[in-house]
Image (cartoon, rainbow, N blue to C red; front, side):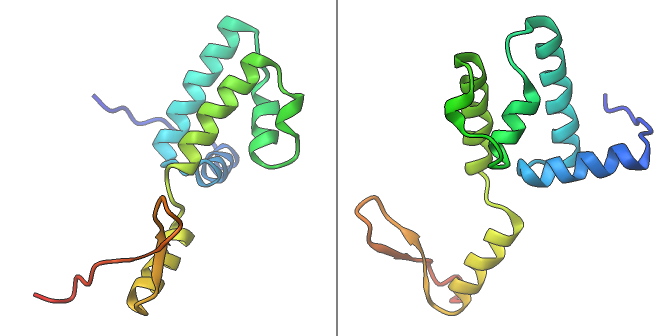
Length: 118
C-alpha cells in the first residue's frame, strides 16, 4: 500500500532535479535513492557522488573503480533507455513535419507511420 511522506521543499527540489537528470518520476527517484543508500551503507564499495559526477559529465568513467563502473553502467543504461520530455517533443515535431525520426541498424532514416489516417 502506498504511503504519503512529508519532505522539506529543499529536499523535493533535489529529488525533482535528480529525477529529471536520470529520467525518472519523483517517486521513482526517491525509491532509487532509498535502494542506493541502503546498498551503499551495506557495501562500502562505491561512492554514489562519484557516479552522479560521471552522469553529469564532471568525472571521467576511467576514474571509477570496477564496482563503481558497474553501478554507473546500470544507471547510464537506464537513463539512455528513456527519452526525456525534450526528446519526445523533438521527435513529435519531426513526425508532424514528415521528417525522419531516427536511424535503423543500417543507418537508414526511419519515418514514423502516419497515424492521422483513419
